Length: 243
Ligand code: SAM
Picture 1 (tube, rainbow, N blue to C red):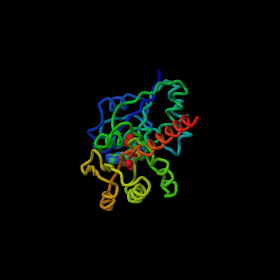
Picture 2 (cartoon, rainbow, N blue to C red; picture 1 turned 90 degrees about the horizontal axis):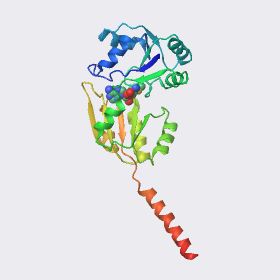
Picture 3 (cartoon, helix red, strand yellow; picture 1 turned 90 degrees about the vertical axis):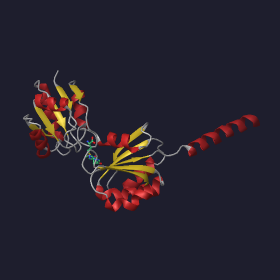
Picture 4 (cartoon, rainbow, N blue to C red; picture 1 turned 45 degrees about the vertical axis):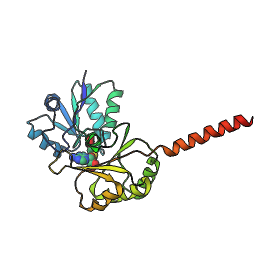
């Protein structure tokens, strides 16, 4: 059965590219890439000569039918993004849905993902966790999103760009309070650094921080919910006694 392979690519260190991923990229008929100029460097490095087609968030209306036609013609396709897993804060989810709808195979290849690397190294309770990805860029929507997340008791993982990190941590401090976080930057690269502490402490040094970043935030404490629960039980008991 024709297959779409979801192939993760390194998030920094090129030696973290599984043999199976390289093999699949060599064997498929086409590679659908988020940015062909970026992926060609990776393909050259690993001596992969498979033809590429472009698949990014602004051309999916054309790219998805094209890929479905390739599968209908009996060809296999691999999807890659610029780094890490396709479909995780990257294009791919729409294509996966369309391929499943058309009854073709979808096969994941295991590999790199910035969120999971950050989660396991954070020192913050790893499960249950929520992967949130990027918050909105504009402050008003970002505030609303953080308000909506502030009672989540699970560890939450955010992606953030270096030029927005100061504003995001400032809003987190205001809305989520001074929780423990781990700011994980440049994972698997030469300047990899994991900074663990309270939001206020990391804000003091944030101006010096550059590179790609993941923020792992500890969950909200459950105290308030327990109080509400206990109150409601007490009320019920009081009502019962009164009757
Ligand atoms: N698909 C990717 C994955 O599976 O991790 C994520 C792509 S998303 C467009 C890019 C974001 O991922 C960055 O802004 C950063 O938050 C995070 N990221 C990617 N590479 C990273 C790295 N080496 N270190 C820290 N964060 C990274």
